[in-house]
Length: 168
View 1 (tube, rainbow, N blue to C red):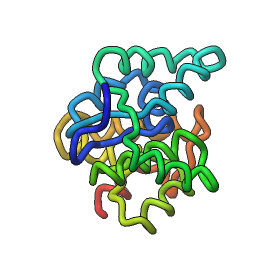
View 2: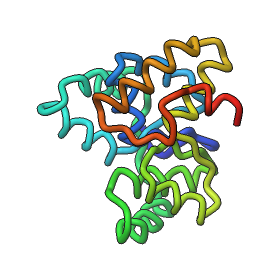
View 3: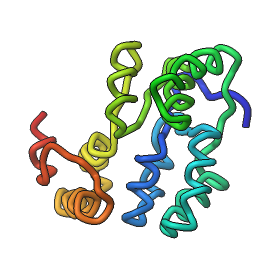
């Protein structure tokens, strides 16, 4: 695929990895104008040898989640962002910015940069809340995913209880 659709929901490696870790990448398929970028695809491909569960995410990129190329404008933004962000974060943020989309990442530096640039964003926890609100996940299931991400994948969260985020 070439460039992203307007208002794309651009997934970063961390989010794809988290949902692959719990075997539920398919939850991401119906996000509005969902896509990811080539740098994220490379990061996932590179990680499959040491993290076999990432093969679920890689398969989704072949079948359900489009991998988009950066436009010239996004590539220019990405070049600047690479001074402070890793390639996946920089490219995903640049593409979301140009597409007037939403960046979906858990990376703190990428989130701070997105906020400074006025780019909408959410993360894995935000998606869990959305999936609960849309009746795609129960609170108990979402809570089990959050616990697994924290205990098994090293995910950093301000709370271990998904209910904390439901009230926000």
